[in-house]
Length: 318
Image 1: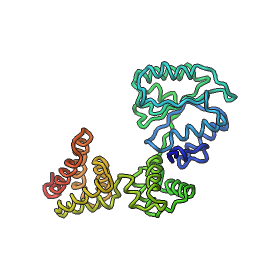
Image 2: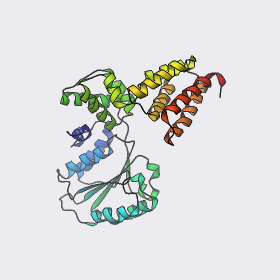
Image 3: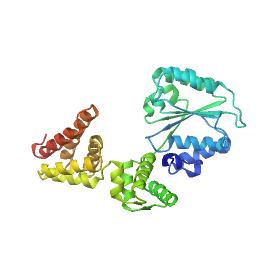
C-alpha cells in the first residue's frame, strides 16, 4: 500500500493545497514555457517539492525522464555531487520542445559553501538549457551569489482552512468519518506540515475508519495543549505527584517523546494567561532541559527534573 504522502501528492498545480500566490506565479511560468532560476524557501512539508514536481509534470506533459532531475543535497553535501551529478545532467542538451530541463535540488542549504560556489558557476554556464530550482528551509544559509541569481519564493505553513480542505478530501477518498475536533488538533501539532498530517491520518485509519481525537493522539505521539495546560496548572498549585503521573501517562500511553513533550509544553505556556515573568522563567527552564535531551540524556529523568524545577519556579522567582 502506498504511503498517503505519495498517493495524494498533486500531479497538477491546481491540485496543490495552499500557497495560492506561488501556484499562480508558477502557472504564469507554465503559460510562457519559461522561468528563471528559483529558490523555494520554507519549513518542511509545506509543498516545496510538490510544487516543483507538479510544475514539471505539466510543463513536460508527464515526460520527466531526461527533463527533470531531483537530488537531495542533505544526502551528499560536498562539491563532488555538484561536479558529477549536477554537471552531468546540466550540460546535456534538452530533448523536448520546451527548450530547457529542470534540476531540482532539495535541501540546498545543506550544501557546503564550496559546493554552493561550484553550483553558482553551473547555474551561470548552463542556464540557457537548464533551469535550477533550489529548495531550502533556511535561505540565510544560501550564499549571496546564488541568492542574487534566483527568484526567491517563500512558502508558508498550511492555514487551518487549508488543512480542513485537505482532511475533507482524504476523508472522501478513503471513506473515513473524521470527528470535527481532529481538525483543530492536526492544525496545532502539524505546524502546517502536510506530510505530518497525512502520516497521522493514515496511522489513525489503520486503527479505525472512524478517526477520533483519541486515536489520532495515539498514532501521532504528540500532545494536545489542554493536557499540557493541566500539567502546568498542577505545578502552579504545587501538586508535583499528579503532574508527574500525567506526564508518565502521556509518554507511555501516547508514545510522546521527551523532546515532543517539552515542545508541546512550551507551546501551551505561550498561550496561557500567566504573568510574563513567570512565563519567561518556564521557557528558560524548558530550553535547558530540551538541550540536555537533544544531547542524549535520559528523557524520563529529564522530564521529571524539569517538572520539579517548574514547581519551584513560580515561588522562587528564578
